[in-house]
Length: 263
Image (cartoon, rainbow, N blue to C red):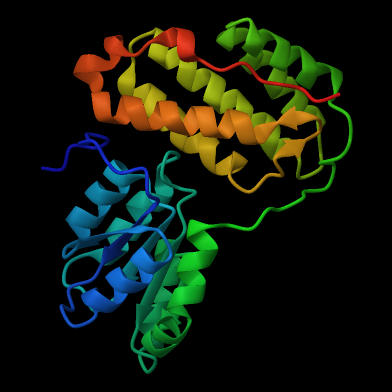
């Protein structure tokens, strides 16, 4: 039975998990992914797909709808859980089987394409998700709100529960898309809180909710040095993933970063 969130040490290269039973197509997938600086994780069953998405925290997941087994349940399961819901899933299958493509969309796939389109656009698609372009959300160049600034001050004091309260208030008050930054920082802080409590699974889940929200933000957003915070949080996520729950206590908590504000 699959054990969620259990992991062996993984590479720093961004992963693409592929449910692909076609041994003739696998070399093509691996070649394109590796050329873009990624790491292909090939699985043959829907059950292994879910386990690999849990383990690898990929930038992208691909599902060949010709795979045997219940791929609908696998897609739905990934999209229903908060720590994997933001991982984009692209399904592909026969262009003449519109019903199957529609079933994949209903299950939660972000896109369901004909195999011919997948083959044609594969390099572009992989590049886009492994190296997402910077997005400048509305409000990115505005000053921090008072609750957001207070939340960051509490974060920097190591008061990770208090930072949650203030940044949640900031998120509730902000109506522009930049509010995602507040939620991303908040969730990184809660991940640190879970490390303090020796809750490995809780920390992993919060990292995987928060990091995608910071991935496409500008390096400096509302004066916050997002690039440095993201790099530090990604490194900690990678390290504690490798440590696992039994060795989480070995992590040096003095390495929790402080958030820099560029006035």
